[in-house]
Image 1: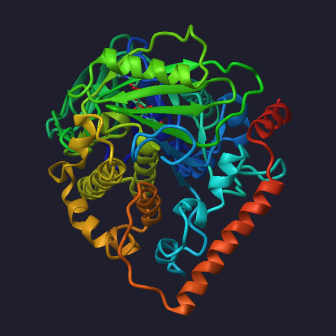
Image 2 (image 1 turned 180 degrees about the horizontal axis):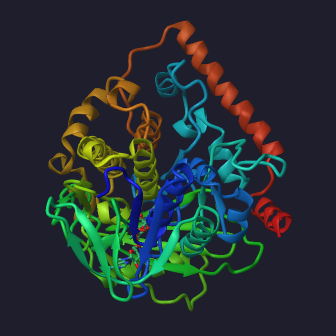
Length: 510
Ligand SMILES: Cc1cc2nc3c(=O)[nH]c(=O)nc-3n(C[C@H](O)[C@H](O)[C@H](O)COP(=O)(O)OP(=O)(O)OC[C@H]3O[C@@H](n4cnc5c(N)ncnc54)[C@H](O)[C@@H]3O)c2cc1C
């Protein structure tokens, strides 16, 4: 490597590669960035649900939100809805809860959980503290026609077509940010004497040298695993899912409502995601091969498609198999792995792209401008992202371990404390006595903050044993519930329908 960092090679042209290349180029315009992707190795082509951080990421890369919406078949995502996770009961009544992106009204200022526990009736926690649930149920958009780009009335992320997203980022990064795009297959890694990577040898263009290599080569992990041999830390004993069957489903009519949240429906041996885009739905069955055969998963998916009005000629889904886990190290010498090469657990809660964004941001912030500082930056990066992956795993496991479902060994095994991460084994008894709080987590920028834990815990029917509130505490919390209800009424009256806003933005931009 040169004394100072000048050249970066990004290996991989999936969502991770283009997000990293775009952010690096936007924030470090003096760098010479080349992205190499193979025309023999297709991108994974799934990954359509995001986290609200994507708004900031796109803004920083310089992508216009309107253009993004117009070109990538975008819909707005205001959170996730979980059907059938608690008891396995389907239908709108009972076994359904939301994890909205909006913080509870009065969060941190009022004893909302204790007041909710003391409130008569069966009102869901999320519904009592946040207007988002009613906005989603009513099929409304999270913003108005006149709300500025990236601005929100109700917090939101996106759903999009992953293939179109990659194309837009590629065009933007190459035409506006100066990223060089090379379509070629990397056949070998050329090491330096000190163990750094000197260059990647491509089939047609020869050697591509750089000072820093970003491995965004997907599940093949060509550099971090293929060259450096860094193994995965398996999470199979905690989160059993290791396969998915995605399928694209047309709407039965052009004006069908577009869901403004990801719908995750549990089945006996996994769960099914349902993401509404303006043009189609993206649906997929996630399952554990140790508990379900591919035929069983296919049958569960077919039953779901039939029950949700998909046409009978929906194409046969492909099967994606993976090892749930993450790398023991993400950054080795002058190579850092981001995206699927760094690990993958499962699509629940769209944490994968959120981790890509966080990794890319961290890289931009701490970019070691000289080789001498790279090892220290790498050590800190590894420490930080090991922490983040572990917290993602805690949060995902939380969705399963409180389930009362007894229709298969899959759910019983999830309930078994031997399959729980140690931290959850410690925190769950604590959370019986008080709600999850900020100090339970180590970072101010946690991927999933304590409010998210509250939404899932109480959505899954967890009832803490809290001390009774004083009169003042009770009144303060009730005022917050009233405010959430007032906000809900205001939003229901003022927000446009989700599809109608998407249609408007489509035409306004064309
Ligand atoms: C079933 C499923 C559902 C998912 N759903 C979500 C979701 O809802 N939300 C979310 O945030 N994430 C989701 N993810 C994860 C998400 O899809 C990925 O994080 C995201 O697409 C990034 O993938 P990637 O760019 O790392 O890899 P890929 O898209 O696989 O790209 C790999 C790239 O590397 C290139 N490459 C590989 N080898 C070579 C070589 N030798 N030479 C040159 N180029 C090479 C390929 O050509 C390709 O361009 C999901 C994943 C799966 C499996």
